[in-house]
Each structure stands twice: as C-alpha cells, then as structure tokens.
Length: 145
Image 1: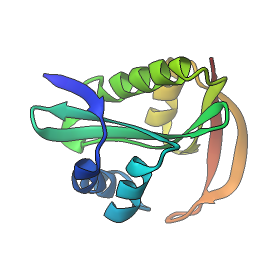
Image 2: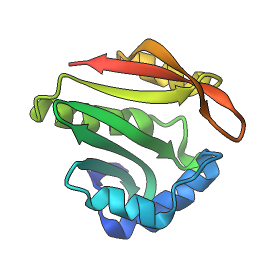
Image 3: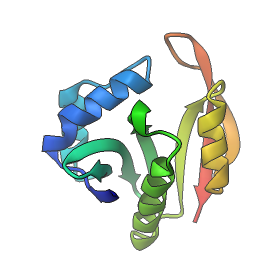
C-alpha cells in the first residue's frame, strides 16, 4: 500500500536515486536535503512500507507554489502515485491559500504533460532552451486555485 507522508531529510538519498533514473539533470542529495529543510518548501514522499517510491517538492513563494520536481521510481510508474502526490500538494496549496501552482516540463515529455493536464494544469507559455542534456524548451503550466 502506498502512503503519502511529509518528506524529511532522511528521504533525500532515496529521492536522489529516483531523480537519477528520471531526469538528465539531477539535483544532488545535499540540494534535495536543503530544499526539504527550507521554510519555503513543501515536500511529500510516496512510501511503500519504508521504501520511498516517489516524491514531489514545491516552493511556496508569496501566494503561489512552484513545483521543483516530481518523480516516481521506474518500477512504480503508471500506478497513480504521481496523481496521489499532486493531489496532496494541491490540498496543501489550498490550505495555505495559494492562488495557484506552476511548473516547467520538457516539451517532449508527453506523459508528464498529460498527467498535469489531467490535474487541471494549463499551458501558459514557453521557456526557450530552458533544459539542457538535451537542450529543449520548457512548457510553463499553471493550475489556478
């Protein structure tokens, strides 16, 4: 059974490993730990027992949230875990009275874009050459609360 729990510094190593199998540009374990510990950050992990199988973290900036990263372990994808994480993040954003949540996603990442659209995110713009390895535009998406 998957449970969504608040992220903690001790989850950073597992989160880093998941990001390494998910992204071409990976945050270091220490960067993830610092993000989790920031007073401006909201972090949740998806756990199966004691094993972290996914995570999301968002920066709370004034009255909006910016999703920094969302990733699910390859062996656990297509099971609704990313949706569970997004639902919990959205609940928290509403509790904190945010006006919306934003993110960037690679324009070629059709699966992620479809996931975000299914959670009522809409495309609002493009960041030209936002990503490296390979160079690619970032689609700016927003979910208004």
